[in-house]
Amino acid sequence: MEQQTNSTTWIIALVALIIGLGGGYYYGKAQGAAEERAIEAARKQTADTAAAKAVNPFESATANPFESATANPYDTVKTNPFK
Image (cartoon, rainbow, N blue to C red; front, side, top):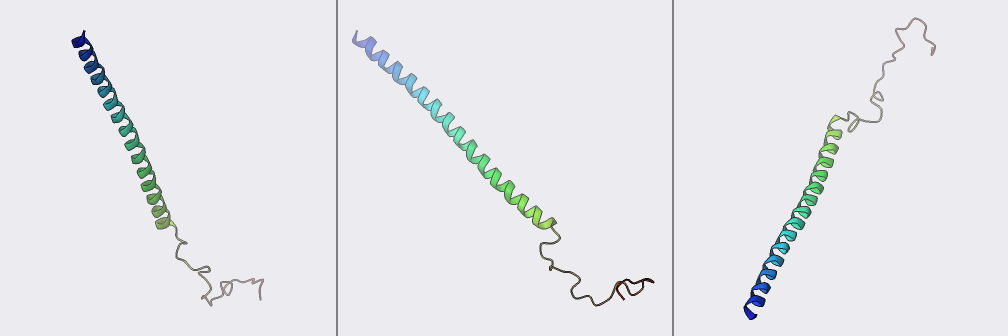
């Protein structure tokens, strides 16, 4: 009887160990995938922001590009409503 109890205990311990290792592997895999998704989302957000800055023509422009212009665009018009 002692031999069968000892053998059963080892089998139960082995099954519990296998289940524990499987659960730990699954939990670690899920946690790693979640971290990878978060890193990828942050990388995508950074790339989107950089692309938007590169395309925006008004990012470094002054408020009024014609403020230093002195020419009157209506000088050559025949009927100038402002003269």
